[in-house]
Length: 316
Image 1 (cartoon, helix red, strand yellow):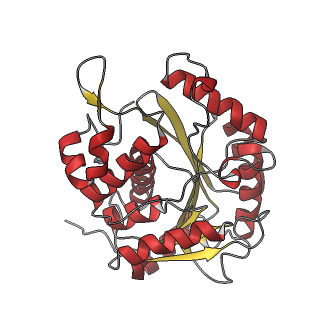
Image 2 (image 1 turned 90 degrees about the vertical axis):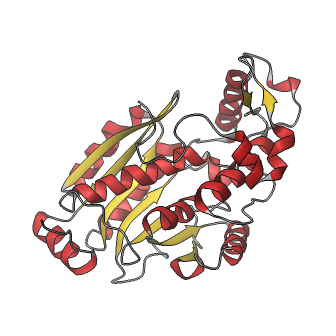
């Protein structure tokens, strides 16, 4: 399965253009086995500088950076999630993707990188609230917004004071969101995260031992990677809370990295009264993931929501 058709990152990277957008990338470009220019994707510095170049060249984002040790997300994959979510919104709106600042999304765990709101605002002009349990991460996100003043009015940040909560303490009474999105923590323990880190390193480096590159890691604070119950536990808690906000969100959604988690989550949603549940496959190269989306609104409520909040499709 290829990248989404609207994804700006399809095909090979144009390293000449990217190095022009971010000169710091130039010294990190290497020649691969096929003779093409590439990067050492196991090197966190290379991934960070590539992200800076992509966000600058493709989305006009200035001075993007993250503190050492924070999660450095793959930009193409994050863009795919947003485009897939846009298709879902369009499917609910007579085939026309609703764009513009009337639509407001909630990014759960926006992180120091703020990538989802930055790309979503650029591509679809949506407004966003980004929440996180890490004050330092939000301070860096605020710094990015300060460097991009055109986006500041459209993206706000909120601290989640209770790390065991997802929506409570973030979504105000009567507040409405057209969609939520999330990249949940994957691992139930530090040991599991370390094992996954080792496997990723060995895959990128053809079986070499992680110890051959002491101290190397792929970034991520413990709260970005690890939570009680891992991915399935986090999503089960998110779903339980979402039912309490049934009338305040049109589409809830989250990435799900493990396909084996989907059946139990879908069953939980049906038990709680979700009226529509969708698992949408995505792929970026060899990596496969899926977007789980759900709503508790019935068809009448959805029509009323669209009429009140979304730009109306043009009829021929």
